Image 1 (cartoon, rainbow, N blue to C red):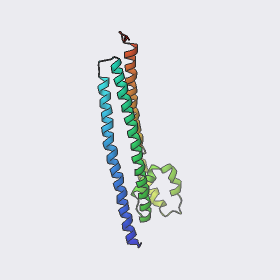
Image 2: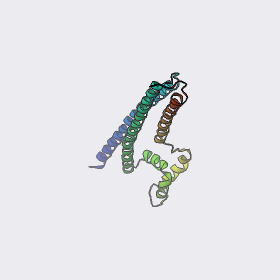
Image 3: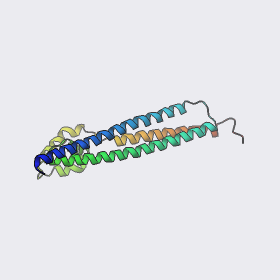
Image 4: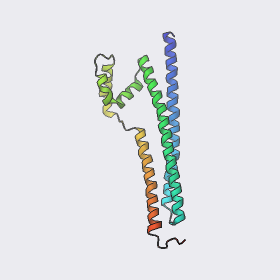
Length: 183
């Protein structure tokens, strides 16, 4: 394949990678909004209930287990979507290296600064100076707090809230209930 055809093919592949990333972003944010909102709404509903009896406890237990399972399943799906995004970003970095462009490579470099810095300090690399300039210009403003970590915190918080509601209900129904359930 001659150079112009190769470049056109690489650019088309780069666009496909961008589309994969965008489709996964849409799926991630749409489902996160649905599942997080539904779980939070269910938590608010359950927490505001005045009825505290054995049937209420069993209902809360079923809803909490179901919600926790759904959140865990969503998180696994999210991690799978992220794997496809990482694959696409990796290919984009390869394409950028071949074409001599940098946008995704800069982001990867800044995300992995401690690990990659020695590689780019090697003066024999043609792009060493360029990456040092990027580091000095952007690294002070670059955050590595990832969406994966944020979603893990959100899922963990929701699961903790469900557990707290269950504990509260067990205490109220089984320990503090003035009229114990008679068989």
